[in-house]
Length: 265
Ligand SMILES: NC(=O)c1ccc[n+]([C@@H]2O[C@H](COP(=O)([O-])OP(=O)(O)OC[C@H]3O[C@@H](n4cnc5c(N)ncnc54)[C@H](OP(=O)(O)O)[C@@H]3O)[C@@H](O)[C@H]2O)c1
Image (tube, rainbow, N blue to C red; front, side):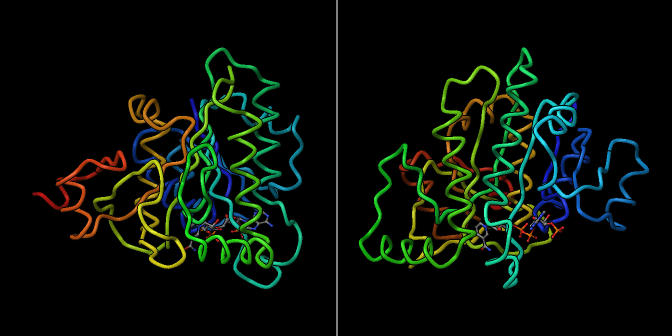
């Protein structure tokens, strides 16, 4: 079975595709334009590249694309240009989540499809009582008003959280929430939390894109990892020295650490 990746041409998308292929999975990507990156991987036979704009794909077409897939990952995000932030499509991520979900429901496979959505630590999981300071609520309110991509991320996560919910027979989902994204060459230690352990506005943590790709790969291919996080919105941070000791000395926030060998060993 295959994993469909949308937003595969982005910084995280590419790292995810590389890691999925390296883990032995077959991958299908939908990209607006092909590039040397995809051409290089296509020769190994495990990568299928579909050159289409994701915003033009209908539910029926999506159901065909998903016919041989057991999982789908969205790494879509608005380009950080004036047109990307304020132009159309305003609901790039939320509309794509809706098309993918409807397509999965049409296919109605016996086994539920795993759906992983790239999101942000700036978006609260309203299924949980995630405390926000008044200052943070105010700033997030302004961000929601003046930066449409944030609202899009909120709507996309809400679609899975509310419309699909926890007991859908055909779709299981995980919404991945990184904090400030950074680029690092290699996978390093990272921690996973049910809720943010720091303020995404006033005290943001760091998350390397390659670690997000690593976690997403584990989600689609590791049953234990999936059972642990399905229906949740895990927050992922790179492990700092400070966090290492905090997490080791108390298991609060239900944190779990991936890649401990990276810093223990
Ligand atoms: N910046 C942060 O610190 C931070 C923190 C937490 C979460 N995030 C989230 O992570 C995302 C960034 O991930 P990233 O660095 O991998 O982003 P990225 O490199 O900008 O990738 C965005 C992907 O979305 C696609 N895309 C954008 N606009 C599109 C459109 N109109 N139609 C079709 N496809 C479109 C891009 O395709 P093309 O290559 O064709 O443009 C690309 O594949 C953000 O958007 C945000 O939601 C960011």
